[in-house]
Structure formats: structure tokens, C-alpha cells
Amino acid sequence: MSESIQIERLGRQGDGIAADGSFVPFALPGETVSVSGSGDKRRLETITAPSPHRVEPVCRHFGICGGCQMQHLAAAQYLEWKHGLVMEALAREGIETDVKPIISFGAHRRRRVIFTAIRAEGSVLFGFSQKQTNRITDLSQCPVLLPQIEARLAEFRELCAILAPKKGTMKLTVLACDNGLDIAANNGGFTLEKARQAALAFAGTRGWLRLALNGETLIEFSRPLISIGKAQVAPPPEGFVQAVAGAEEAMAQLAISHLSGSRHVADLFCGFGAFALRLAEQSTVLAADSSGAAIAALDRAWRETGGALKALKAERRDLFRRPLMAEELAKTDGVVFDPPRAGAEEQARELARSKVGRIAAISCNPVTLARDLRILIDGGYRVKAVTPVDQFVFTPHLEAVAEVER
Image (cartoon, rainbow, N blue to C red; front, top):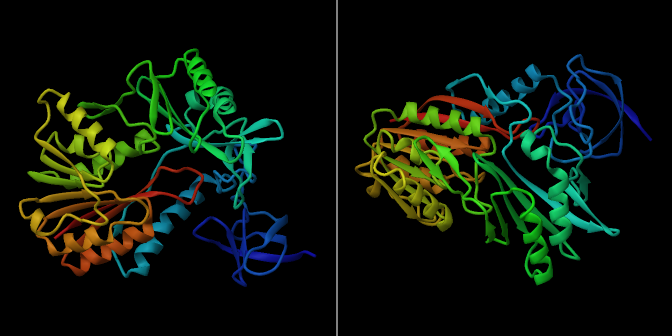
């Protein structure tokens, strides 16, 4: 049995929220809709009175595939909503600051993607998980991706048909580097030698740079390279890379500008150096991350610049368990940190105890960013400005860069 309800606003995950507090996926503010089900989560059946801001989705898989949630909302209203997510997170922590206009990136920009594949009824399903299920949407297109990735979905599916386990799922990470595609498969464990050889033979016909399996490089035809300022990095297989190159550049430039004049900088949760290598053009840098492979890639990239950068020390360190202490930051006058979604609570507490003059706090989670900023504020800092960066188009996820000073 269905009922008619009015949608009042959008929630943090992009669902429409009705007056009674129930959530309706794919419904927009101002719409009258018919829904079924009971409790907090309802199912959208029909739209009786559509919003003037409703638009036609750009992908035929929208509404089934769980990769995107917001293709049905017009661009201006979509960006306003995402800007509001940052404002809301800051407000909950009582933080008043200048929130800059959102920096946005449209479709066909994503250079790194993780696909899922599974065997089903004699074939392989290849794509993304469906919304709130473990089923796979079998992709024929994905307008979020760079064209050179989207155009080759069929060959990625073929590789998964070779390597996918009989039971369970496998992941396929595809990264568009400056010089071609880097492919990393992870099927969870044991692979028959016959399948390994078939994968190698297939890779040899595709023009890929490298094929890795379960973290091990099977074959490297050419070293994958990503330019970072004056340096070129060879990312480790399955290593973290910012999803959109333009977003990485925008965030880095915001951090560099804020830390301008800092002589000694620490880059915490540095990965393979998206910020550290750029910062080393103007400052000496201490870079720390828990990934040994990322640290090794960063150190090699710095050395291969042949002295074009200032001194950079790359240290493997788990900053969740062993944050850089305030005493260790005594000679540091600038810090950038970009942690995973969980944020950098313990590291923020040590920074709050320090005398570091300027901090660029970067996060893919406005909620944990706001929490960490509150810790810094309580330690004597002020938030000069926050800039949202819409790296993950059509989703509730976004980056934000906070400029903090003592």
C-alpha cells in the first residue's frame, strides 16, 4: 500500500527527507511523491509533483548502480547542497569561518576506479555494487570515468573472467597514469597457474603499463608514472591516488598557498607525496605515512629529481597509533595533513599542543574534519577559511581544505 508524502529537504546521503523524518531515495525537496514501506526508510514509487530542479540522469544505470546518488538534481542545486554539507558539519562543532565557493569537477574526470566482479550463472558480472546490496550492476557505461577508462570496460571484464574466483568477488583497480593504464587485480588469494598465464597473455595484447595480482606485479611493460610538480611518481599497485587529477592540484595549491613562507613543513598521511613533492619546491619536508610502499615510491621520486627539490625525509609511521608529537614539531612551522575518512583526532591533539604556525587540514569527510578543527581551535588556533572540493561528482562525498593558523 502506498501513501503520498511531501519532501522537505535533502539528507547527508542525498535521500529526500519528509516531514515525518522518513528517508526517500531519489526524491527531491518540494516534490510530492508516492512511497511504499514503513519506518524510516521508504521506497519511491511515483513522483506526483516533480521538482523544477529534477533533471534527466546522464547514465542508464542510475538508480540501480550504487556508484552515484545525485544525477537527478540540477547542477546549481547539487553544488549548493554539497556546499551545505560542509557548512552543516562546521556548525555542529560551533565553528564559524569563511566557507569559500565549492570547486567543482564535472563528469568524465575520474582517473582511479575500483570495480567489482563476480561469477554468476556461467558469466561474469562486472561493475559496481547496487545501492545497499551485495549485488553487482553489470556496467555498459560510466560517465564519471575518464573516457580512456570508460572505453575499455569490455576488456576489463575479460580480465575478470580470467581471474575471478569460483566463489566470492574480486576487485579490479584501474588507474590512468600520465603514460597509460595501470591495472591491479585482487581475487582474494590462490590463483591457478593456468589463469595467471592467461592473464599475462591477455595483458600483453592490451597495451597496459602494468598488471598486478594480489599486490604482486605480474608484469610491467613500462613504469607507470604520475607527474607531481617537478617530480614523477610510480604509484605502488592498488596504492591510494586522488580520484581526480584536477582536484588533487586544486587542494595542493590551496595548501601550498596557505603554507607559503614556511621553511620546515610536515606532510602527515602523505601517501606517495601528492602534497609533499609539491611543497618541497619551497620548503624542507618531513613526510610520514603508514604505507611502506607509498613511502618508498615517494623517496624514489624525490631522489630522481636530481636535486631539483629541497630536502625531503620520508618516514614510515602509523600516525593513528604514533602521531607526531608536539615536541617533534618544535622546528616545524607548517603542517599539512590529509587522513582517511576517520580523521586525525590523535594527531590533531598533538598539533593543538604544538607551536606550529600554519596548518592545512584536508579531509574527505566534513564531519571528522570539523571534529579535528574543533580540537585545534580549543588548542589556540583559528580557522581562516574552508574550501569544499567536489572530487566525487554525483555522490555525497567531497573533499575540503581548511586553512588554520595560530
